[in-house]
Length: 376
Image (tube, rainbow, N blue to C red; front, side, top):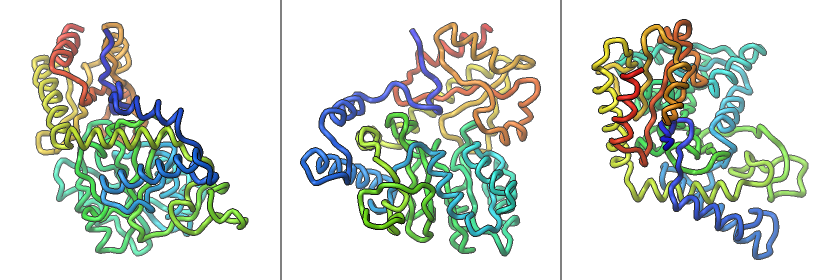
């Protein structure tokens, strides 16, 4: 039997409701905004209904919900749009390459400058580290809400309030947080929330979201058909059409609508509590072996992710051995090299091994996994 503990990459399996929604979308819906015939109209109705579900869940307006191919796509639209006029941006040391690489590329091209804020286990220290990097030309703070490597939760609400006070754009990467933490654009002062649909929102791969609070306007990253204002040679100047070039992913939108409904039915707190309990069992069991390093600090808060290593053994070697025993865990840098440089896990270990349960994970499989690790 194969057990998936790599749910931070993508949740697997998907809920039955999501599978049914995908099947229905394949046989029922046409292209949204591409005609007035019944099949196209059904597609348009589905897309709008999905936007409503997403907006209600994350504290936004339906028209400000932009459907993207993934979180990386969403982050590129937001980062490149805000940085188009130049200036300075701030990121954290825990950023995924979906933030680091577009920021680095813009800096290398001489279009912007950027600073990296240090994240510590203390919220107040982390917030101060961001605040002291703000300059007169700072355009945005771009940071993850929760690290995809360690699961550490950043003080995103406080960072949002800081940005609001300084009139700086706050672009939040919610890939590891949406579906687990109570994220709300309105109350959290998030200007652009970028997230994946296929992780804790339980949609299918190929889905992502860029959600705006409407304060800052972004230029299109791509140009093409939008289904509206087709007589013009330029993209429409209103959301979501201005940022959605090309045929929308109807099947993905249907899966997201069903995935969010599943999360709402289960309850955010219940899901977080269940997965966190498995992480606690995992850590407690592994603590029996002094040669196992767990990358957590008791003073910090975490989403249900645990990174670990066995002393002097490459992370990939551990993951491969566990894979032979039927356990799926991801090893390596997790597309977040900044975090690993900070953790000093790049040389001997070449990253970490990551344990990431989902709502479908259970205690029995978690204990079997820990026993297998202790016997390596």
